[in-house]
Length: 170
Image (cartoon, rainbow, N blue to C red; front, side, top):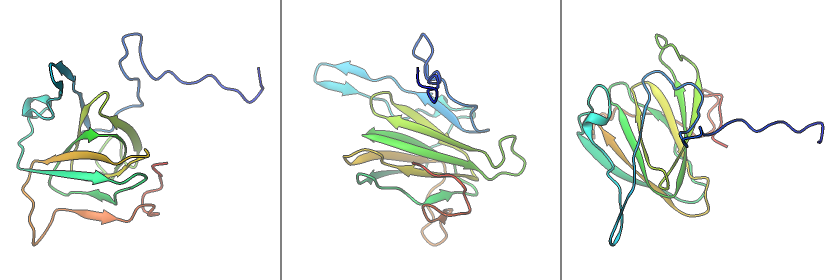
């Protein structure tokens, strides 16, 4: 065995449940099961009772990322997001900017994919950015619990790679 070799970390349990680092406070993940139907696959993307407290949907958008594309880092002061991948593979970075949180200034990275769908709930003041690491377009829907205010958006942004968030989505 080569001296530099290290044992790979566990990524799933014997029941194929993902093993991941400690979840960021307030971030919730709901695994969604695909249903094979006669003509294809049915995937339920959102139900308010999947989250605690229940999530009230007020605004829904569809986003597509080109291969290698990355969103800006962004967060909201008031609204929460629920993110569901509908095509391809996404890498989501989360950075906790809430001083009163038990995970303040921590970073977490999740991989979301249509093969094993999940709904990711991101609370206010948790910065998040999304990268498409694949070679084809990827897409996702975002369900917000607040309507979008065109004149004064609850969107706070930093450019990808900003030094204000000392982590990368590579």
